[in-house]
Length: 440
Ligand code: NDP
Ligand code: HSE
Image 1: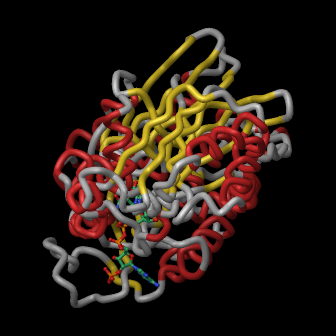
Image 2: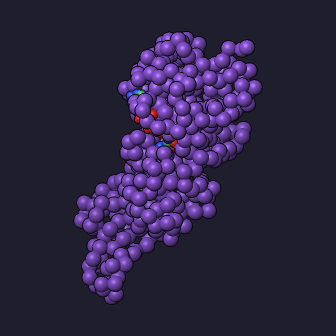
Image 3: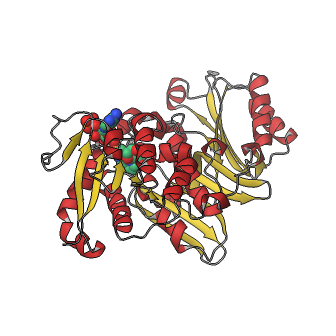
């Protein structure tokens, strides 16, 4: 009988439990594919007594993932605990030092320590596989690492966080509040243990940093990513976007520019007719612009137990079959240091929503500041709130109104400077909302 490929899993939550279930459900097919059984021999989580919907007695239990990671019982350590430090980091480092293959879904860990961990894996000749860490069930890591060596990649962008896309979609389509949508995303197992990582854009930034390394042959550098999340997006912005023919998506964009690789994560207005605008709910999408293939888009479930476990199992099959790749596509010594391009250099269209005092001359004052910064306006829209319009149908109340500007292409630096001056002029009653526009 061929020796089984022995797997130790730390973390039996949303993803870990699904991995165990898929390995059990598809045991026969997976054995055929790998030429040997994939056998879970040991597990670790915080609470041994928790009902996880399956029988734990078949596996050796470890209270400490680090001890499991070093155990002689396993060939491969699967880290599904989460977090960039603590148990997850210690256990992965211990596994690699002990010469065990590692499979993980932990983008926070790899965005911070990916280079050092890839070096450790390389030194021991073991795998460090992380397909599940970006875009859940969508095989984007494999695509970048293995399917596109004949291409020079110019840009990649996409929706990389299921929780944010789920929240924005339901707020827009069902008129639910941000808090209601986030609660549902947590209940469905989409959100991170600390959902701030999702809604403030850090999770997308971690994923983008990993994709950038694979796409551009650079060292992972999450610090180089400019990050804004979706917590400041209001129902009014979603309504305005709709009226103006846009949808709001949290996009991660990595682009080769003359000044280096630009990496940014921020809410983005995309035309309602664009392909990316059709991506709703927990679905993720990544578009890769490259010289030979031109444009390639991958779309699929970006979070959730089964979808993510599907990617973990794919990595396990690769490793058990002896298909071991350089984690970031190239030997680590060949990965270039990523250059950092400040977002102030970014150039594009902007949506600017100003809550202005409803007085004569205000719109002119705003327009003057924009003209001084050499920003051309594509459209300008003034909206009174429904409450103000009901209170005073003739519009003489002086209550604040929304003034929405859509600009033609301008630099981030020019937009920031103009908005700062408008604030300084005392024309606005609330902090301004600025959202970048991508027209594809
Ligand atoms: P969960 O919070 O559902 O599960 C975490 C698991 O880790 C739990 O079983 C928990 O134990 C265990 N755990 C936590 N701390 C320790 C510790 N110190 N020692 C041992 N076990 C510990 O997380 P997910 O399954 O959602 O996520 C796991 C990883 O996968 C994270 O890195 C996440 O970012 C990533 N990921 C998640 C996706 C998703 O859709 N959920 C998608 C893609 C990636 P106990 O159950 O006893 O509390
Ligand atoms: N919290 C993450 C998301 C999980 O919502 O996309 C998948 O990485």
